[in-house]
Image 1: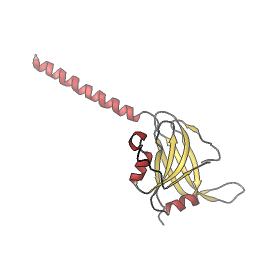
Image 2 (image 1 turned 60 degrees about the horizontal axis):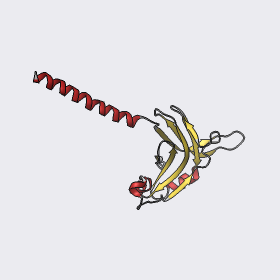
Image 3 (image 1 turned 180 degrees about the horizontal axis):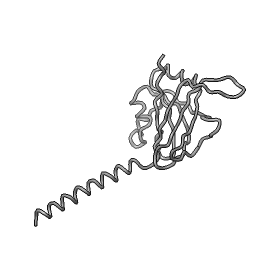
Length: 166
């Protein structure tokens, strides 16, 4: 009789641990997930005007809930530690707060869509930044990022901009 009880107890313990692991997984998978792509030197063609080079930014929501994109920024940090200090939660970095080496708000990311903009699941928001500013910041020391501020996070979602291979 004690063998059967031990088997049932072991099965119960295993299913309990599996259920807990599944709930933790679901907690982290819930909400919006932003996939950010940056394309340098893209030609922007407009009717009745000459083509200009821009840096395109596409933001796709591949998560399970919509979110609202409030602003886009360009941020340049000297190091990963400076980036961590700048973006760390206020409780941790209250006394050691840092600022990025460069910060610029992308004011009009798109002529069609204005910010703030709700980004539903499966939708893509396209934006553009002035290519000359991006290239000038890429030449300076440090790492340049696009920061996407949205409603589900206190910290922005970052995507590093890699310098082009020349």
